[in-house]
Length: 394
Image 1 (cartoon, rainbow, N blue to C red):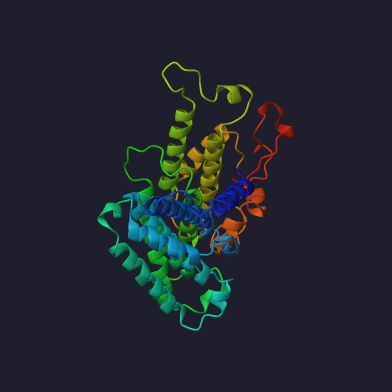
Image 2 (image 1 turned 90 degrees about the horizontal axis):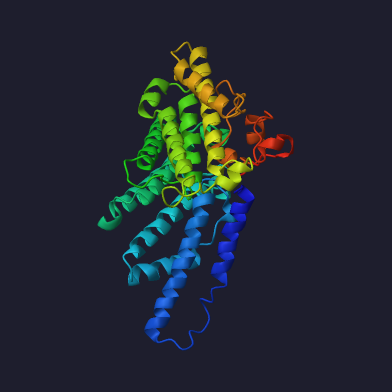
């Protein structure tokens, strides 16, 4: 699925919610039945908002957000009635995404709210930090260990603390150096928390494949910036020890391998392969394609980290064995090594830093074409690669 298809599906979900008939007269229903049906409509609206915020918050797309005025009323009604045990989770998922959206809109350097800010930036960050702490401290026992909810909290914290990244002249002059280091360390801890939650021991395998793919990508991009950023007082060795990014990517690849193997199996032992028809025609499983993309990005990141370390006279962050292993894996998948895209690192060898939200928004633009310009990155009909155009927008 490419980004355009995903956007179309999200707006289709919005349209379906609008045409549910929530404001129509409940003919032939008792007051109790009418109230229950109304709550179902409200849950649908909350779920639609959740899906939209899940995709657009880390992309920092204010034009794609849903207005929360009516949604606040829906949330309060569902929370007050609490017909089902799952209503507690629905409400909390809405609340954390609403808070993350507010953080994203307020602290985006290009937003009107940021440019018209009248109070010190550190006070704004502290206010959001208090709201996040209050949210976590008031979670009901039933959802305190819910991994999906906790991962959204971690993403909201990353959105808050990434303001410390020295990517924009608009923010660099507004944050004292010591405060910036504190924000960056909190951002690193939030990224580690997200990765720990994502790859916690669980019987649910694979995990987090579809819904929060954008969250994972956002966390990886921020973590990579933290690993490559050169700033007085910022120890890359400590950062590497605290958040071993290569291990996290390896675990994601392992999850993808398990999913690919499961998709290739029949429902029962001895059944014909589920994907046999597409495989016989030379088409790759979409998840296999994603796995190859992640492996290639790991190779690029490992090479960049080694280059930065050697330039600074340090032991390479990633051992040469790691780079060699990734290169071998890329070669086995038909991947050709390429240069690190400009702007991937925070002022390192790859050039000037690119804001994370810009990278997230432009994944269908020059970022992918620069990263994967080699013609061997062609999928689809492998027997006719010249006619197969690769769409990186998924």
